[in-house]
Length: 135
Image (cartoon, rainbow, N blue to C red; front, side):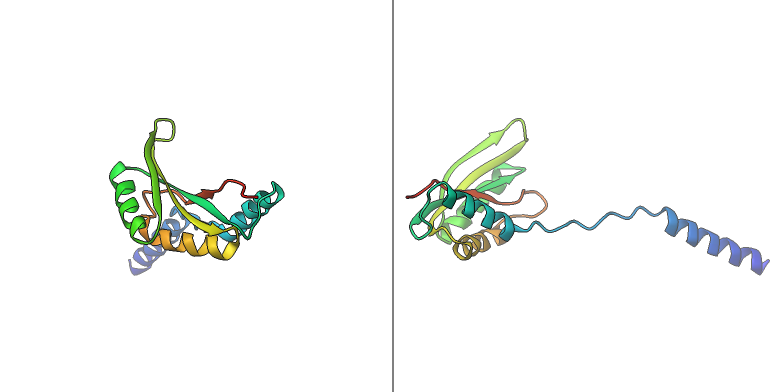
């Protein structure tokens, strides 16, 4: 009887482990690589990296309230807000948070680092950015 119980327990644990759904680990987005590519593209377009650029970081979240809270906190750390809008297609609320900075990886990364703690990971998307060419 003990052998049957022991065999049943082992069989259940093995089949439980074999059928357990394992979710793959999420890869962290490499912002530095993407930021450097965008900086290089702007320089190729004629931008002077040593001049101040008005860089806008785009924030996308599930609710308007989340975006409003992020904006109010971002203003405290030196960003200007531009708008809040809703995309029917993407079903997301968005805003653009801007600050003047030189076009280099250190300044872009430092400013993104000010924003990232303000943004809820589960209900907001990654933070992209853009800038106009400054000659």
